[in-house]
Length: 280
Ligand SMILES: C[S@@+](CC[C@H](N)C(=O)[O-])C[C@H]1O[C@@H](n2cnc3c(N)ncnc32)[C@H](O)[C@@H]1O
Image (cartoon, rainbow, N blue to C red; front, side, top):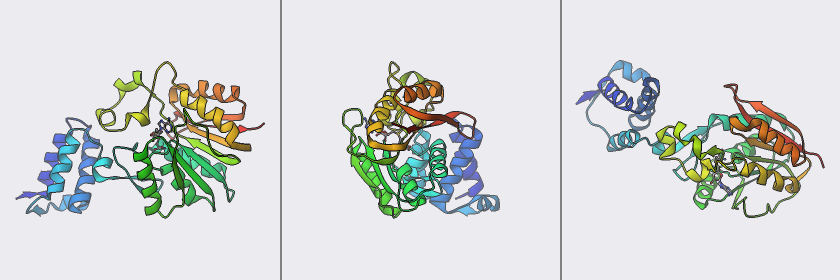
C-alpha cells in the first residue's frame, strides 16, 4: 500500500530525468486524473492507495521513454474540444489554435467554402466547421491513417467536414471557388532536429514535421500556386509558418500574385501565421 503523495513524488522525481520539474508534475497530474480520477485537491488530502490500475504503470513506462501524454491518453485539447490522436497524427499545437482564431475573427460570414491541406487530426477544419455559420469545409491529407483519425473526430464531434486523400506535391486541387484555403504544412528543417525534444522526435510522425533544408518553403510554394486556381477572387490563403521564414514566405506569396500579405505574431511574439488574398 502507498499514499497519493508518495506516488506523486516518486513519479514526478522519475520524470524529471526527461522533463523540467514543472512539466513532470503536470504530467503526473494528467495521469492521476485519467487513471485514478484524482485531482490536485485529492493529493493534498493524501489518501491511501490500496492498488494501482495496470494502465497507470504502463502509462508511466511510456512516459519514461518519451511518449507524449496525448498519445498515451489518446486525446488532445484543441480550441475547447477534445480530439482523438494517435502516433499517425501531429498533436495539435497552441499556435494552430491561434491560426484558427485568426481565421474566425477575419471571416465571420456564413456559408464559406473552406479547404484545409495537411489536415492531420482534423483539428483545423472541424473547429472551423463547428464555429462558423453553415460553412462547407473539406480536409486533405496524404496519410490514410491520419484521414481515419480525422473522420473519426468529425463523427465524434458531430461535424460534417469531408475528408479525402491527396498528395498536394503531386496532384492538382480538385476544387474551385473556395473562400478560404488554410494549411499548417510540414515546415521544420531536418537541421532543426537537434533542437527538438526527444518526445517529439521519437514519437510524432516525421511526415507531418520535416522538410529538406535545401527547399524549406516547398509546401508553401506548391500550395500557393495551386491555391491561386482553387480560390475565388478575393479568397484568402492562410498558413502557419516557421518563425525563421516569415519574410521569405511573404515574398514568395507576393511573387505568386497574392495581395495584402500580412504576417501575424503568436502570443509569444513569434511570427507564426501569414495571410494573403487572391486579387486576380
Ligand atoms: C504539420 S502537420 C499538421 C496537422 C494538422 N493540420 C495540425 O495543424 O495539427 C502536416 C500534415 O501534412 C500532411 N502531409 C505531409 N505531406 C503531405 C502531402 N504531400 N500532401 C498532403 N498532405 C501532406 C501530414 O500527413 C500531416 O498530417
